[in-house]
Image 1: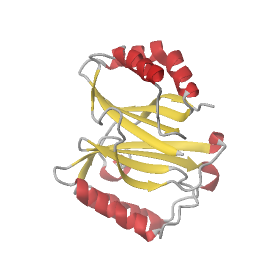
Image 2: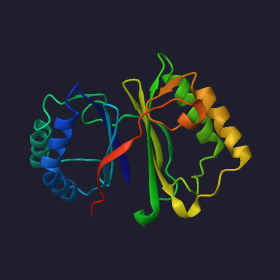
Image 3: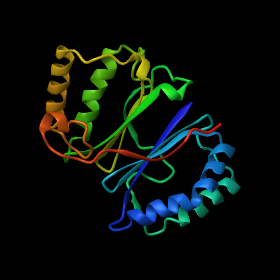
Image 4: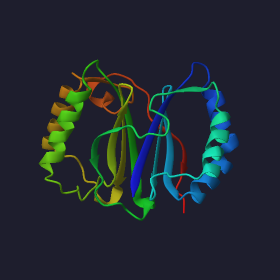
Amino acid sequence: MERHAMAMKVNSGKMNEYRRNLGEIWNNLTDFLDRNNIRNFSIWNAEDLIFIYCESDDGLKLSEIETEAVKEMAGKFDGTFTWISTPGENMRLMYEDFGIVRENKELIRHRMFMTKLKPGCEEEYKARHDVLAAQRGGVPDPGPDSNFSIWSAGGYIFGYDEIDTTMEVEETPEAREETIAWETRQLGIMDWITNDVDWMTGEHHAASIRLAWHEGN
């Protein structure tokens, strides 16, 4: 299975139009996803940013007819957004802990976060997460994180996490302190767009909202 991610910024004053256009093409879009075996498709929003995540078995290799279908649907959005990622290409994968993909999505909750890297800090962000990956020794996390990836494009960070609710436990004081230490250090290289650490900083940011989701066949 391959994961795919893309991101865009909605142009000023165009969010209502973007949402309306999404509703108008939704049936055609889900038919397209099913025809091409694209699953677990979701669209997320915070402030004026859009993040799209999906999975496939064939690397999104589209026929000429399906490519034209994509162009037709995309044309409905002309003037509503500007690409952050490069169209047709995945964003840079900064971290992954794919773990065990749960077949039963009913027991999964999602976390999707967005941040903005400070200038020149992309490689430092990647290096810090490479250390986390190395600490696992190549062994996937058994849970509760079951499908966790962090992507980057245009100076932004987008994180997508599927969390097995049957494995979640209350955070210990020690784990809480480790989280605070990590997030405090991260504030030196990035600024939050979503509200994930507002509990720690006392600031107020937007919540990430899942605008749409299609599980697929």
